[in-house]
Image (cartoon, rainbow, N blue to C red):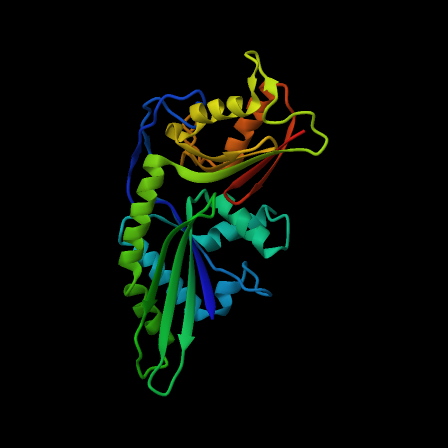
Length: 299
């Protein structure tokens, strides 16, 4: 079983129109931003495999990767060379860890990509012929949310040319896969990407959600929800529930791009804005971010 990973941006020019909001980084007050296509392919590694050398050791991975890239190229994507980026990272000593997941995260950050696609190549040999199955899964890079899942199969043939079989598997699923990505990505562009925010209290905290706080003496839970309404992308959020010691927003939308700078926007940047909000209320917090979930603890 073999794996590949592909990072990409949308294969179409699209325009973002946003409502007025207190946070200039999440809303642009009607500013129009063009999202340019960008793709980078990265091989996925199993335990014991080195992300930095994996393509050199497996011809089937290189062929399948090339074919997937060709599919994106045919739809107008621009491809960034992974090997060149990797060499630049090595030359500049960018890698700070030998942990493969850390290296992958660093390359994703370097690429500036919005989506990565994991491609699993399964080679099957049998008396009735050989075949290759390709499983493609696309994820939004900053949140890890799934965007598209497709399976392509070459069909069985009496051949040992697994390069051609891999190419056939890609060709049989790439169009549907791309169409789904474009549909989901259009939704992200128009409505933002979804994150979860979990707010709780340190065991020694003197505050609860019922504490009266701020210049107007409102309940802390009310202050938080009013801020969320004003700062979520297009004011789009959903409050799952509130207790005296916990508040969970299970669907808060943040923008694809920072509306003030045009740079990629991620959960960490939204967490920073929340940190500023709590500081303005005179509260200290700690924050932890795992994938698409922001954990905030009020001290």
